[in-house]
Amino acid sequence: MKIAKDRTSLREILSHSPRPTVLVPTMGAFHAGHLSLMQRAREIAGSNGTVVVSIFVNPIQFDRAADLAAYPRPMDSDLAGCKDAGVDVVFTPEADAMYFPDRSITVTETLLSRDLCGATRPGHFDGVCTVVLKLFLLTGCDAAVFGGKDFQQLAIIRRMVRDLDVPVEIISCPTVREPDGLAMSSRNVRLTTEQREDAPGIRKALLEAASLGTPAEILASARSQIEASPLARIDYLTVVDAETLQPVRTLERPAILATAVFYGEVRLIDHASVNCRV
Ligand code: AMP
Image (cartoon, rainbow, N blue to C red; front, side, top):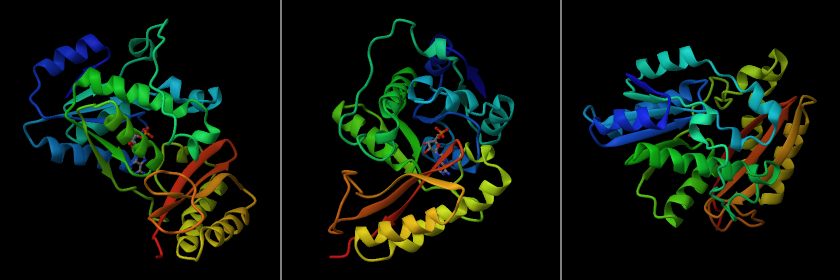
């Protein structure tokens, strides 16, 4: 397994690496969800292709300095995880190796990022798009693998690839969960014991509510269940069209019940499918 810390060494390594090149962009602090993406990347690349994992805590996608500072960075165990997963190349730049101090160009998304996480995290998805496009260009990857857990991120990246004619195939993988249903997240380690015991209630509330009647009924049920916990504070709770991500009042097309919930300073997201009922 080769490790590159800057664009020059990454390009040097990849110039000798066989195609297809399959990229897994991450911010590190690996759990089984990340490892499932690496396995999928290995399947797509085949035994002869090249799997690249980037580990980069991207400062320009954080809207809260405290969240960026608190983001876990267990580099040694992450590198061991990549090795075990059969990754060929790891790209681990520092921020100054990714961004020029006087950088002035950013990718901006104007529609799909308005609601959900975009509404309360200004600039977040522009930061994501900018870093993901840079990673696509730096690696020259043929395909890239993302988790369906971050469904708004996935939809926005698919839109970026479509709108900017980026020649990268986008592959999605299902959400990997803890045995009690909590979606795995690098942020889960920051929950207190009490919060961690309470957090699977988010998934339970979403699943129970998603099978009810109208979006209004679904939202009322999910809200009352999540708010029943004194530890949980809802950031948003909404039913959106699965494709346009716009809020819906009727279920004429596949929709998604989505939430972000704060436990103290830790913000967790999850969602459940709502089948159309016409
Ligand atoms: P992150 O390191 O949190 O930026 O995530 C890197 C990639 O892992 C993204 O494509 C995420 O959607 C994906 N991911 C994060 N958590 C999970 C999970 N529980 N199951 C599947 N994929 C995940």
